[in-house]
Amino acid sequence: MADLTFAALRRDGEAFMEALSREQQLALAGHKPNADLRPIYERFAHVLGPAALELTRDAFRTTTPNTDDWRSARALLDWEVESFASRQLVELDERLIAWEATAVIHLADGRDVAYQRAAVEMATETNREERLALDDARAALVERELAPMRAERLQRERDLIESLDIAPDYIASFEVLSGIDLRALAAECERFLRETESMWADVHGDAVRRQLGIKPGQATRADALALLRAPRFDPYFPAREMEPAVRRQVSAMGVDPDANGRIIYDLARRPGKRSRAFCAPVRIPREVYLVLLPHGGATDYRTLLHELGHALHFGYMRDDLPFEFRWLGDNSITEGFAMLFDHLLHDGGWLLRYSALGKTRVAEYRRAAAFEELQFLRRYCAKLLYELRLYGGGDSWSSLPDAYVEILSGATNFQYRPADAFVDVDPRFYSARYLRAWQLQAGVRETLVAKFDEDWYRNPSAGPWMLSELFGEGQRELASELAERIGAPALSFDPVIRAIETGLSA
Ligand SMILES: [Zn+2]
Image 1 (tube, rainbow, N blue to C red):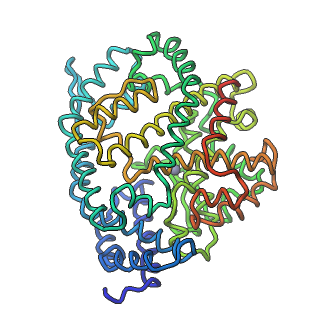
Image 2: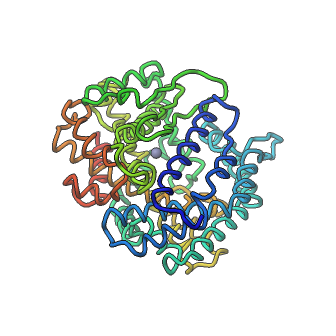
Image 3: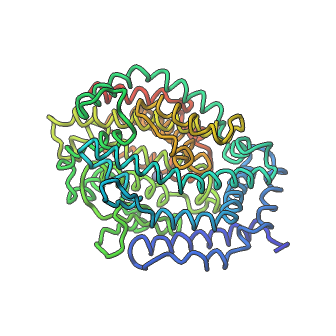
């Protein structure tokens, strides 16, 4: 394919992504027994082949920085690089998927638990000794079988990316391709951890003593799973009301929740349909599926709102944007819009209007939600700091598990295990995208409040502004550039901290 052009790459690239997305949607929604992806990869091999990688690498090197052509080349090159590595690692990935699907944890009392059920079992196990015994057995299995495969994958992926010569090393290559300054973000994470340290020590100690009946220093990550489950609010988030409630809210904001038929809500019960809600953009912006099986409960509402944010983003993108600004680019943006919607569950006014909590329980729920938020953020900040150590080259691979335990336990006050050091890692710094998304949603929310008041989510002027200023632009910009364009302050954790403080003192 020596004659591959940008126009052909965009055309076939879009056809490829549509085919992949449709196949996944059909399988996950239960229309097909499984996704048959290999024939699609074969049919479109030229889209992600060496010629395409060469074409996009040359384009990125020769176009003028900060122009739209350069952004196009960066997004396409980032995609090519990721696919290049995935292609070489496909056999290892298949082994990993097969292992995870079939691995069984054998407990000392003779019980067997499927590896994939372990997190749910630990979260719902009320007997602490049983919970810790399950985690001991899980960690031993992971250390013996999964961790070596995951460590191999991390090392091979790093070597593959470095072999492409995009920048001197893995971290610098990611920074060039993503436009995210990881060291600067890490410094912000360190500041966030310092500034919320005493706040976290207070609420963590209190929750561990009250809800688990142990000393704060004894709590482990398995205990955290149980602590954060908080099923006591679930009756106030009824399954029946879920979809109508969010539809009512989006309509009140002046936005058609169906996007004139482009967003398709699939609520039907069907054998083989995945139970967790998901958004499948099959043709952007013309055919976007929001697939869910409403069970009710706060977590289900949060997942629906999150996926709805993605669906509105995809369904309202301008259709004249080139392929790469609709399908590729900085995922901090789409994750930021998804989080903007799932964070409505922190808003007292929203909860009063669209949940069944009622005045007496809203404050207690908000404090619990802010506690969970602070735990997750401190964990993600620590993950990024650890992942920079992992790829930084300054530590030997054998010393990384100790670094992992020290960083993650230090940030969360829950004791982590060395066995998870190569398993609890987001590929290609996805943790950085989430952290930027957290900053973006908090900045966008403050901008919405300033423009459209506290109840912006039901102000009929807010929706049209969001469609044109936020969703319409797809992922043409970086999250930081989007914040600047809409007049929000530069991305930082400051509005995130303000929101958490408000929630904790509700
Ligand atoms: Zn998401």
